[in-house]
View 1 (cartoon, one colour):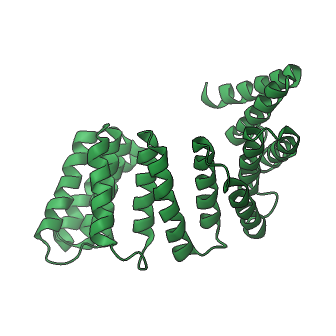
View 2 (cartoon, one colour):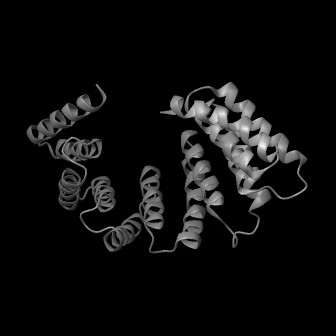
Length: 273
């Protein structure tokens, strides 16, 4: 609840500023948190004032900005994105990458966050090819930071494969999804939501390529895992029902498709009204 978080943060901010000083890391941390909460609450004018305050602090400092400063610029970019100022948001992300991460062999979590946010922005703008290029850079950064056998790397690989499917860039997709399924199986197990998500993605790939016989066991397997793991009233289970229903519609099996869609709709209505 963003509104509940706002009151203690607003009270803490002047106290921390008084104790540590305006330019202190602790003060910038609480300002970042305050800006994030205001942004998520839709109070964009107030959030903008907070981020501008952090930018002004940065301008007065003679040293390279700390991770808290970089987070402030990321917060400001997110604010611009929410306001539809996509060009301004893009400029902030590009400036962060060029200024603070010129050496791609020395990256950190904030660099990865910047790339992920930039890729999401490109997708919002419909620039899917540009988003793919950013995500490929992000995949390499994820490998460097988290390792090639990590869940984070598996998720980055899966997201790249899903974007490739939207672009029709299908040749690398099967191998990428095979790799992410191997990671999910090794790290999280075959009954995990991670593995189910990977199965859904593989099912969609086979559906797009017209190999419906291979698509069905992946989509059904994902549905069964999610029903057990997340519960029969979860949004993820309902989404898996929709995916399977789309396959059955394509095959002309309208009876089974209708039953699945009805079950999914009932779950979504209970969850969201």
